[in-house]
Image (cartoon, rainbow, N blue to C red):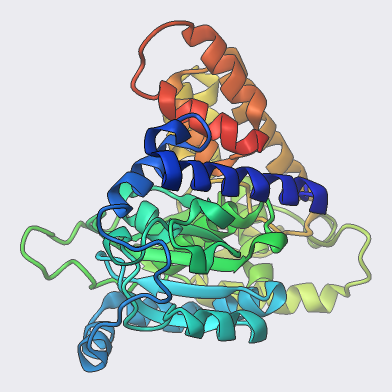
Amino acid sequence: MTSTSDELRTRRLEAVHAWTTFIEHGDRAEGLVRPEILRSWERSAPRVQVDVTEAPLDDESDTRSFWHDSPLQVAVERVESELRRTCEDGDLVVAVTDDETRILWTYGGRVMRRKAESVNFVAGGRWDDASVGTNALDLACRNDAPAMVFSAEHYAQVVHNWVCWAAPVHDPVSGEQLGVIDLSTTWDRSHPIGLATARVMARLIETAMPASSARGLPGHPSPAAVPGLDLSLLGAAEARLDGQRLLLNRRQTEILALLALNPGGLSLDHLHALLYGDQAVTFSTLKAEVSHLRSALGGQLASRPYRLTVPVRVDVDEVLRLLRRGQVRAAVAAYGGDLMPGTESPALVELADYVAVAVREALLADPQPQAVARYTELAPYDTEVVEVCLALMGDDHHPTKALLKGRLAAARR
């Protein structure tokens, strides 16, 4: 649900009140703002002036050299068109950092680009909270978890007009955190989908990472590729054949998903209906997409009916299998988010709704705190799940209780 202008203005006034209370009275701000924001303010206060006007800049040549030697540079180049399109559609500025929250690459829409440049939200800018105070990039990097900072939740006044969403980016082989990706715009353009978009963008970069990024480093042995097709549909879609990422367009990925989910095969008519519904798309168009997909699969796609002839593993199947076994925590850990966000395939839209509802209902029936905490990263505005979990926790001093209370307060604001 989109936040209304009145709701955003009220939320901004609350953030300004909390910030002013902290600046003037310190600990009196407790309870007025999320715990992670208050802790960051407390770290920032001794080191950063509230009237700082810009982030400090690292040496330009050092930053450029680090970027060119980083696997992040290869990955961002591979998905740059999608990152740019996201920025232009929403008038955002996007930034990718290293693991010390130094910006390595940015791109911005027309308005946000100018705003970003004015505060050194550019390559070389240092956005750790010791340099410029509380912000989403630092929180995501520090906590290795997605983070949002809205308006005056930023410590520095110069970015009180911003809202930022950031998510960590990991090496897909070693699991090492390489940095974060951040999306920023003005506070009045805040939208509930912002954090989920940052997560999807982070996953997109991870899937585009060069296969050798960590395999040759000490302590990162190369795992043996499992033969067959691995298909991830939850969050950012990705297909790997014998360990190698397939470069497919969205429609080809949708076809692959439908075939993987229907191992018995699909006729041309049935595949067309599942993919296009009542859209006026010719059979020849579908045949052309199938032909491209067959080439990408090395011919391992039979005809009459269309059927994959390679072993297939799909993340959706794993999540549903775990739910059927009652393993809620494991299912939520395997759940990467909405199934193929933006798909127009009627069959995939229906499946996406089914999986999302199944995960949610499982959590309502068995709200394990750690599973709920993980779920709130994917669905930060689903307050009912958090409320049920907190009610069952009662007076227990569970380590995730403060986090869940903070999530609930943020969602309600």
